Length: 321
Image (cartoon, rainbow, N blue to C red):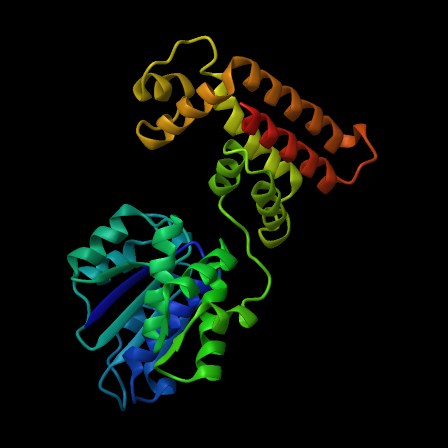
């Protein structure tokens, strides 16, 4: 008996990991006899439980897969929670959730001796590079440091493409291949989106070229609307505006005044405010207000051009200071 709860915000990555797990659980068995899968918005958990409680026929084990488990509330989870209190030894139950699940479910899975796996890639760039190398190694590919960095940077937030990329590399170079940056470069495809903090960090550092490149990736690879990016910038500079005139002298003061977490976020906000000063923050707010009006029809300029001009001005503002 095994119970697996697999979670992750990236649907492609989650489905890939569930597929690999089911393949491992089936092994050399007959999938058509062993596996029952439940997907979409139509099935009920009592049907999943019925399948999990059914003894295997012509096989040693059964594998029951239930996807989109996050859509069930606590009351609807009752049949499943009851099953997890006394699971059938001959059934491997795989639960997949693309969003947050009830705490009672995770507790029940843990109490049943189950495994809880978060398939989402790390958010930090350095951790994501390590993750890329580990994923490649699982597929029998060895990436050098530069290749892992290049892949992680190119994919950005579009981590779901990694599985397909590794499959192509594996079919091209074969198992146990050692790959460099030049080996993987032709297969990378379009650059994916990037996390908002990479974008705002480039602006804060006055790196105009980098900021414009990241803007393009957010608009195209990440498919964010310009008004969504404006919201990110409003939040970013709004926090700095809350520090104006309050004489915040420590990270703790900055966290309280700006309404953000203490520690690194507060430290970064305080450093950015000190770099810009009250006048710089006020100018940034003016630039945001003007660009916001332009996006809503005050100019005939293309929306992407409006955003490029805004980002360049914000970045130069930080660079000059």
